[in-house]
Image 1: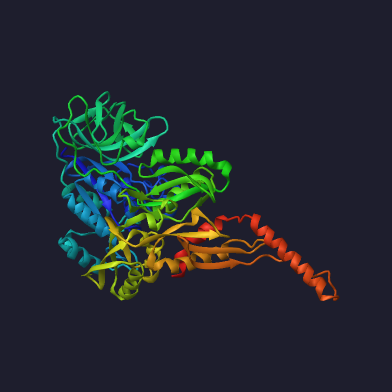
Image 2: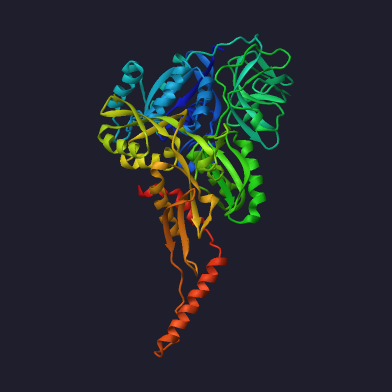
Length: 599
């Protein structure tokens, strides 16, 4: 175990984490030049295009140190986005050290800070690294001062590199070996292995990636998953190069994969502890929790014939993503579809885009919602994730909405606009911390419903891209919430319903009706668009009817003839309005997703 090092890289989005991983793979000879491409560990098309890590990865490298000999380096890559913070925490729990990568031109950002605190909670050895020192806009000395102020290290302990050009990366490898402690554990104790990630193989089933803390595991070992007490026989064990490589056994300190013959990824939960069924460990490793979706939206096929294809596609996608949940639902306006749960808005965008790309589906996504806790008058407590299921005001006694605790790091010149934005979103101000170099850390408690739409985009816009955001779920708090229904010609459209705070209901009603008026095409009759809470209409607008010129054939003549033709047209439109149906195009739902653009 003295020659094993388990480490991860923590950084904000676009600070060079994946590029540094590429250089480490090159220098250790793990990847040949023929295999090379940018962002080797980001193997999904979406990850390549967006430049972010969505799915965590792990890879084992072998490095021959000129003085100390041969070392096994296990890099456990982590996602950078806040939606996937639980995966980050489990990856950190599998390591003894972490490279803290900071962009020299941007300094320390909110998610860097959040992941650093997670790493310190797990007692990891932190190696600070300043990246992109070759950029003309690099502020190396200011960044060194920020890191020293943050973690209390000496300036000479901070490594200065350019991951893109490979400058200084050899020093990073030496620091990993010299500064990060080897793993501890007892190879003779009962088996305890932490699942830090899990993937689905079409031919082998669920494949958990594990870090062995105690004991050892080999082919044929009878395993027990401690969170659900399911038992399986080990079919294969191995280490994680760029591909899976079979080995005889994994012992304490090792990182690798096991194939337990389990067909469902939901049974190999991230954070779970694996032990031997015949000689079980006394207690599981700490920190396991079930991941709960935070944001909910309806997914419907634009063509009803694609319903079966959508169901099969969701089934396949859920095999690879244990955090994604779905269940069938029916809408009067959109027909048959599915109510899906996501970790956040980025997770939702990724799932929708993967469904459309990988399975050739055309989808309508309803307005995202969060989960509310409603207490009815008879004492029954409901968890409501679909606005259409919200009980009427007369049948509820208490509504509670989820709150999140946020950290916003920004240059001090943008404090005023950001505070105005937070005030618009019903945020509760807590504290302000002044950081090194004219930067401020603002702490707020914000209703999750106010943050999911475009809060992050607006924050980036008003700070010219300099502000960064991190958040964590706090719990539920009482609030005056109500269901806002949208009615077309007096008929409520359940897919357009939304739960809003009563203070903002009028403002929301006006914006929704105005957006729909722009999106719904004109019919041969007037279409009334109304926003209502219960039986009370709070906003209304009309889509004017298309009108044929029935007087075109009248070249002068008696006025009574013209009146007769106009009256006949009016009567026809009145009858048509009684039987006509309004088609709601997909653009209307997309317009509602951007409803906050006017703020």
